[in-house]
Length: 375
Image (cartoon, rainbow, N blue to C red; front, side):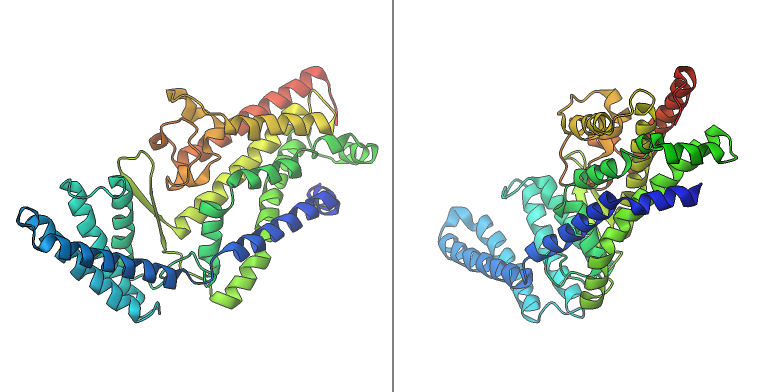
C-alpha cells in the first residue's frame, strides 16, 4: 500500500510543479541579498565615529555638559576599536576580534540606556543585540554576518525561514500537496486497489496519513536541495552554532542557535502536515469535491492564521497560533496573532498541533463509519 501511495504522489505533476516553484523562490531570494554588507556596515561605524568626534568638540567647552563629554569620549574610544578591527577585514581569524569590539561598544550603549542617558532605540532591542554579541564572543563565532552573498548553506536556510520567506508560503504548499489525497481515492482504480489490500480500514488510513505527512515534508526538503548544494560548494556548510536572538514579550531576550531553529522548524512543519492531512480526512467524510476541500483548507489554515485575535488564555491551544515559526521559536519577525508570545513555545506547539491532528483523524473516522462513506 505504501508503494501504491508513493507512486501516486510521485506521478502527480502538481507536486513537482510546486517543488519547482519553491526551488525558484529559494534562488530568487538569494539573488536579492546584498553582495557585501560588511563594507556598508564598516562605513556606518566610520560615520558614527565622525559624528561622535564632532559632538565631543561641541561639548568640550560646555562646563554643564562635562558628564556627556566624558561619555562621548568613551564612545569614541570604543568606536575606534571597532574601526581598527574592521579595517583588518572579516576573515574567520579576525571576526572574533570584531565581535569583541562591537560587544564592548554596544554594552556601553546599553549601560547608558539603563541610566537614561541614551534613547536611540527601544532598550529591549539593545539587550537582544548585546546578548547576541556576548554569545558570539563566548563561542568564538567566526562568521561575521549571514546577510550577504557569502552566506554559507546552513545559515542561508536558517534565514530563509526566520526572515526572508513567510512561513505561510510553505504551509500553503503543504495544503496544495495534501488537499487531494483522500479525494483521489474515489477514483475507481484506486478504490478497487484499496479494497483488495488485506488490511483493516483503520490501519490503512493511519498508514496513509503517516506516509503522506512524511512525503510532504520530504518534498519541501528536496526543494531546498538545489540551493543547499549550490551554497555548500560556493560558500561552505556554515555554522550550526550561529545565534538568532529576539524577544517574545518585549521584556526579556531569547537566543537560539541555527541548529535549534532548524530542528524546531522541521518538527513543527511535520506536525502541521499531519494536521492538514487529518483535517482533509475529516473533510472527505462530507465532500468529494477537490475545490470544496481546497477552499476549506485555505480558510482553516491560511485565512484563520491571519486574523488578529485577542489575547485570551485559550488562544495558545489553537493550532494556527503556531504557524509563525520565528515568533514561536525565537520571538522575532512575528506577525503577532494577539497571543501572549511567552506561552508560544515550540514543544507546546508540536503537542497542540498533534492533538488537533488526532482529534480531526478520530472525528473523521467516526464520521465515515456512521455516514457509511467509502473511499
